Amino acid sequence: MRYISTRGGIQPISFKDAVMMGLATDGGLLLPESYPRVTERQLEEWRHLSYPELALQVISPFVDDIPAHDLKELIDRSYATFNHPEVTPVVRQNGVHILELFHGPTLAFKDVALQFLGNLFEYILAERGQQLNIVGATSGDTGSAAIHGVRGKKGITIFIMHPHGKTSPVQALQMTTVTDDNVHNIAIRGTFDDCQNMVKALFNDLAFKEKYCLGAVNSINWARVLAQVVYYAYAWLRATDTGRQPVSFSVPTGNFGDIFAGYVAKRIGVPIDMLVLATNENNILTRFVNNGDYSLAEVVATASPSMDIQLASNFERYLFHLYNEDPARVRKAFDELKEKGRISFSADEMERVRSDFRSASVDQGATLETIGSFYRETGYLLDPHTAVGVRAALDLIPAGTVRVCLATAHPAKFGEAVERAIAAPAPLPPAIAALENLPTRCEIMDADLEQVRQFFVSHVS
Ligand SMILES: *Cc1c(COP(=O)(O)O)cnc(C)c1O
Image 1 (cartoon, rainbow, N blue to C red):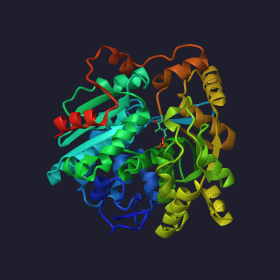
Image 2: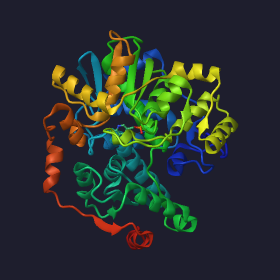
Image 3: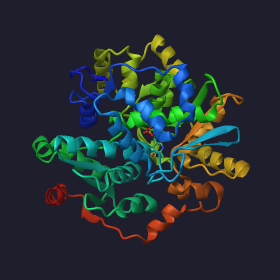
Image 4: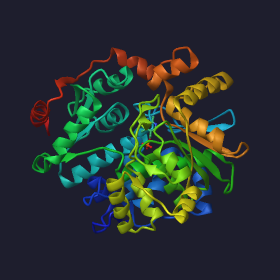
């Protein structure tokens, strides 16, 4: 399988090169040249597989430059860190299926992709005799999942900046209790934007970037999307008994990575009916699906912070398909966005969009109300991101059909919102409670680029 860019500016490359490239060098995103198809018979054969066995089946057709035995070993190691034997179990509550994606090391769904990506990086770097220095800024979730994905890995050093005192206490501990030599937490006396701007400044210094082999871990890496396709197939197998019974999914959406993985799952032949794109008050994607209005607005802070995004980075992958794989159309759309702050779509295009997705925006009041009512009816606690998806599923997917809601975080990770919703503290899982007693390591600094650069240079691999 070869990979191409949505902007059409690179020659097709292999899977391993796509993993190492991350963002395409022409500014686009990487996608496979074509999608493999699973047959009905294969789907039935998959019913007996464990999660890692299924992952190998789903991922293999996209990877032709890693021997099967090595790929199997990478996948097995990536999911052995999950604390549930099923990795991503499906539980049934109140007429919906909940796909629990939060049993990894940081209790959020990003672990599913980043555990795999960390192992892939290590494998490819060792083979090529290369080093990688990952630099990133986080407001919480991605940073901790990235740190846990690469801790202790050979050839990789990671530097993650977070705004000092401005992440949730659990999120801070999930980062700073990782004391492996190759992990550097930097708490910046400033905002998330200060952190982000310093990361951008380091990457924009091309000589510096080259000299120190700088890399990023954002949601644009193809391997992350690919790892996420697996659990759509897994959930379909768990939520159906037999045959090609279709299932609908509801996905709390931020950067469009997770729901794009659902779109890929449908394209490879997993029997998916509706894909519900659920947003919070930051609802540009809902306005797009429902009204063809793709226009940027200000980001609003909500109870589901990992979805507080306007420009969804993975959206470009979908646009490429919507434009029948024509990179010139993609470039034109982004020119329009830059000039006018919006992209316009034809009636035909919107018809296709609405056959691919349904969408609803769920505000903070409705989110907390959903956590409360779901808890009263079932005793099951939803995290605020998951609750956005559950509310959208109940509103848009007919009862009596198979509805799967992606549970993207453990409720204890967002304890404050949960406590407000149910007027009682969210119970702490042992993994989180134990963090309180672990040693921590973290460098606290001013938002001063030179100081950060100095620290980086004296700690790179
Ligand atoms: C990142 C994240 C999301 C959004 O996922 P995308 O792939 O960015 O759309 C939703 N919920 C939680 C808990 C997250 O961490």
